[in-house]
Image 1 (cartoon, one colour):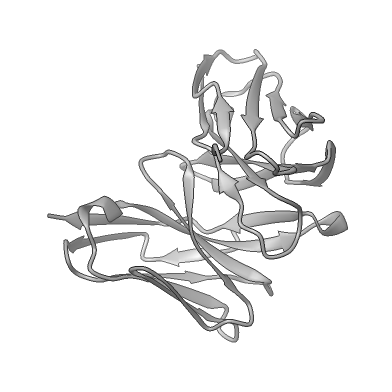
Image 2 (image 1 turned 180 degrees about the horizontal axis):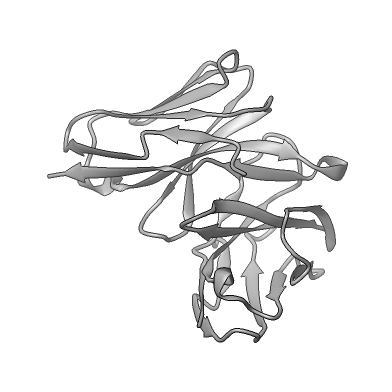
Amino acid sequence: SQQGEEDPQALSIQEGENATMNCSYKTSINNLQWYRQNSGRGLVHLILIRSNEREKHSGRLRVTLDTSKKSSSLLITASRAADTASYFCATDAYGIQGAQKLVFGQGTRLTINP
Amino acid sequence: KAGVTQTPRYLIKTRGQQVTLSCSPISGHRSVSWYQQTPGQGLQFLFEYFSETQRNKGNFPGRFSGRQFSNSRSEMNVSTLELGDSALYLCASRYRTGGFETQYFGPGTRLLVL
């Protein structure tokens, strides 16, 4: 089962507007990452936020993390048509010998209308 | 550096056949993970290899197997294919396992089982 749940499942906005996506997770984490996927292709890493961080910026991206609520949000400012994609949050989970696996949410499908 | 490469990019098989997918990680990366993505189940972790050893395994049947070579290249094999195995198979690499490290994904292999 998926660790994370993302909200909304789909979002459609006008170019230039801001887009906010939310992610909730169930267990304690070491870090949370956001990825972008264009049309069923590979995942592109956007940003990683550690469990002891509350906010992080990268260009037009702003990520917040609230470990008390087990939630994170991704804000894309001044959206562009090229931002049209699916966005996934992923939390880490550790198996034997520290081996890591990412547990993904179901994703938010973002559409930017020109 | 070249990114993660996966071959083949597209594959069509019939039920009962077997398939082998290949992944070449980023140069210097020693950890390779595999994920399956389907519309119904989303992104699910298959397994991770580090230094030719399987370090972590997801909840998939034994028909799914993998291996890693001394040059860190990895293959995954699916035997006795079922219709439900149709999916995008993604490979990701990291320098080492564990810690606050980003996984870098390849473009994926899209498998269609008829």
